[in-house]
Image (cartoon, rainbow, N blue to C red; front, side):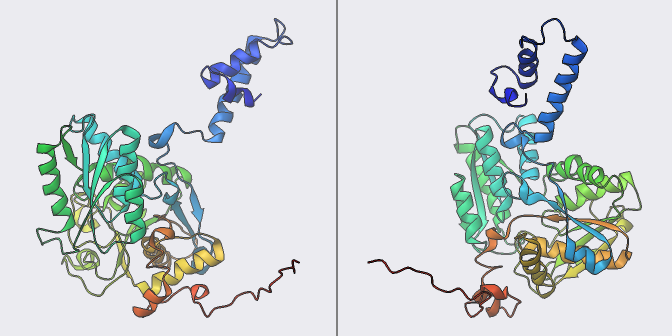
Length: 405
């Protein structure tokens, strides 16, 4: 029965009904109520299979995955939202889709138009793939320091890649500011016009998480979530999810995990934007209050949702994703390492028996040349995955060639 759903040329649910009604043994004997029951069963079956209609329809509705080691260590239930399962491979697919939809709805992005964005990689990948699905081209401005894997993926997706020196935001040639000027220039010269994604200060970003990620977490935990925590890149995820969950239950704790080298921990703790230390993490670590953070993602004392904050060092974070790969089978990137470290600290703050959710942002394969590069990590004095050290031997493998005459 189920196979007929996929071989009919008519819409799936109507196709099965037609198929059932044309079966000789049904004839006039089977009652209409039975047909209705079978059609309802068929519709449910298609839903269970999770059929999506293209790239855009595939963004979101990612599962929660229990992080076993983190849960055991804290006595809490710690879950990761599996955003690496989005079709573009990261949490940034949600923001990318909403940025494009918002521009379309406002009449700013028209057929043949360009999408221009400054990004550390994942938002650019998301925009390039959404653009492909919707018929737009993309121009991506990226700091030269970002991983080669993300640059390769952007080129693979057909984006025009512009690499610029990595300089602070206050510098007019910072990749974000450069991309804004480039969008203005292309809007004047490109036949289809151009828009600037402006992910840091475009609040369509946080709206994506308010309308999708937050409600998904609430539904998946059956409203029993006690805390949510993630790092800040643009602030969209923290602000959007935080606001939604607080509206459902004001007692849900909303946490911010900051890598070293970022200024947000000091901002949340003392109101001063001040940074110290360094981190090899990419795509997170902010030095200013973005428009996405304003009102929604600021400290609770200032009317926002955030009421817990912590710093997570690379020394704390990296072993978490190395163990996650070797012991639980998930290969995650550096931002996920910071998130899990933050979730553990929030769990210790709340005590055993609580349910905490964080974000599994993207796969570690996008950072293989850094996060999983033994020589690079050793040069920084950081923990490294011992099984990738050339001197490590886990299994002694004999040669079993046969002599061929």
